[in-house]
Length: 378
Image 1 (cartoon, one colour):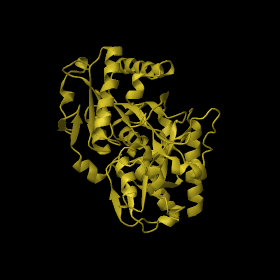
Image 2: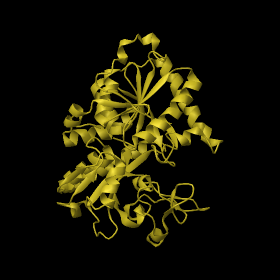
Image 3: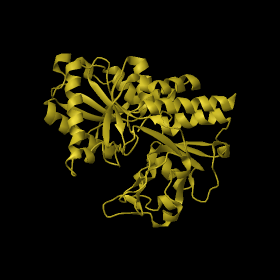
Image 4: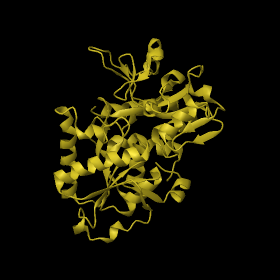
């Protein structure tokens, strides 16, 4: 029965991936909801996430300096990177719509959901699929777009281990120290939890690292035997270069190129013609030899991609205006190599969205099934 459940799980993943037209994720624990009450505003200001008073202003004033639209980002990567890049996006939206925006990075996935539910008429957020599902069921948050990364509007979990490790399957992780970003992370925690359950395996000591970057570094520094973070496929930049075939066996950089991996003058992580785009690339500054030290043991089935979603009472006409502005902002990269999108949410150090596709609520039904399977509640 356990093996049959795994097959059903994999089929559910595949069906959801197939429903997507082309390519960060993730949500909340009881403890996190209790503890996460602060929000990083711009670069330095902090306010109480769950007790924000933005809802007191009349809805007709939304988008003014006194009642700006709150643009929320989950803290899956460095908050300073998100803040600076988020402000570029907010400025572009302001120029296109004339509306005022304020960028915020709540301290956890849980706090992001709390803010959306506390101010349903004035918040929009770039949130993972699992967080979207929970917030949608909790307070009617509604999806508009899903991320595209280099042609994929799905993503995966990668299981990282030391390069000299012989770990090759979930069963091999029994009793080992596990580093994950956040208990609300879809790829970092929830999907691996389901995979453990299906295989009847149990990790040993756990390390809640706080971000994908920190989970990668926990493996690099020897603080964990394995880590679970997001996987985005490598990009072969050579003319006529092959594409990833979608299997675990080819998820990592070709073995004969590992020794060549290095950070380029353009601050990108390359191994020959292969650009590294999975979570390891985000720690290239702290650990330029990350690919030489940490490898991908295997990956999960595909996961529905992260979203841009709106609060349940967000004004429909204003939402449509913002959606049109975002589509135009992303499209600038089709004709401008120095487009601002790539300095914002499109940056590999930010969320790495190379584009956006329209999304429908039913595309995230698999994640609802995952919540039901695990008995997970916010």
